[in-house]
Image 1 (cartoon, one colour):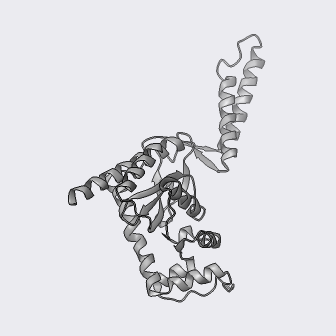
Image 2: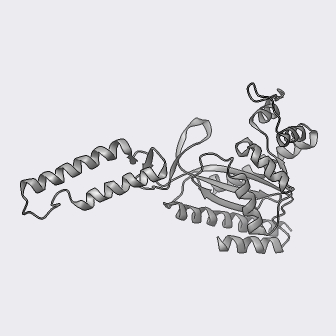
Image 3: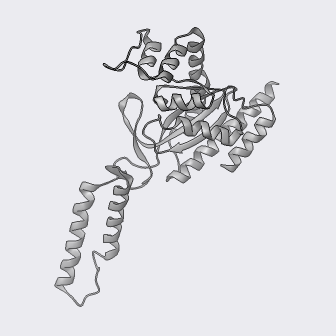
Length: 282
């Protein structure tokens, strides 16, 4: 992470990584793990009972024999540790090869065993902040990613563009409190932007939140629509380069700290390559 910050500092001194407008988005990246080799409570609990019963039977058959000849305490302890890991994770199943990976919903409704990789892209197409999480949804990531931009660049972005996955009323209120102009549609407003059908309330409820009302009013203007449309042009090409050209569709390492480092190195390489490309065109 320190190297990523140093590269950003170098680029900022060169007048790059402009933060007038930033786009935030996430993508799912597969883990280096098989989705078929899983820890599951309905499998581990019977396995633990079976090992304990076999161990006790061996001792009953020959009390003088060294315990654990075939089923030892270490095996039992390992299964108990796996059960504890599963319970602490709050998940119904975990990978045996990468216990930090999570089953995450990806495009098309399918599930991917992997991680959520997040980036913030500046208006001149540099990665201004990045991280890897186990998050299954994006709406809790907007504020932390804005914080990460401020931490990395010592500057607050003026304008934030993000899709509806990052929406919640609290996020709108937080951006207003910080003086940041957010183009962040709620699901109904996103449908209106995509189909032209006017967004009303949510179900039978009438919209009353002032921040949400102001957000919708802003996004309905010609200027607001134009700003929101810039989101795809900023962030999606960066993901395309990372995943298609750089092969970041699957992590090569295992565990959250290791894959976070891998993603950081990919972001550093992207920024330096873009800087070199710009230098060639000047």
